[in-house]
Image (cartoon, rainbow, N blue to C red):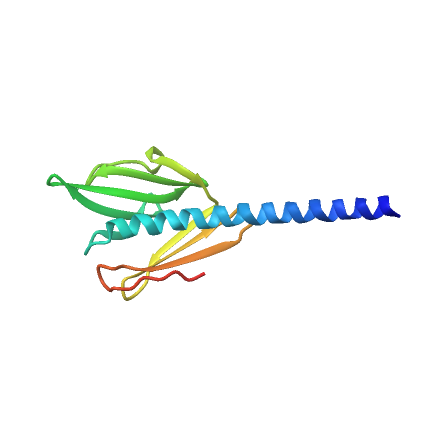
Length: 147
């Protein structure tokens, strides 16, 4: 009886461990890209410096900045199952495939809402999504995250 009980407890523990590990991986896949995007937006948040544009049919977060009198753009986007980033001089022609792959992810949607709000939605391999809504400080003073 003792051996059977111990065996059942080991099976239950292994199943619980697998579930916890899977949940942690799912959270990482969904949260990490959104956290990265939020940080990059906060760094670049100045009037008319943050935009969402279409490039090659893909939504791209475009963050502009001027360094030593030269305008540059940082593009952040999802391409072929990965989060990509590229830093280029404004006006430079570049294919999305030429960016730097940052992290694996299964989907990223982005849109500009009213009142200086940007909405992002990331997806993991299982199809679970997480949403980030961020209020640009350059337009208003508050920002928030909705889960």
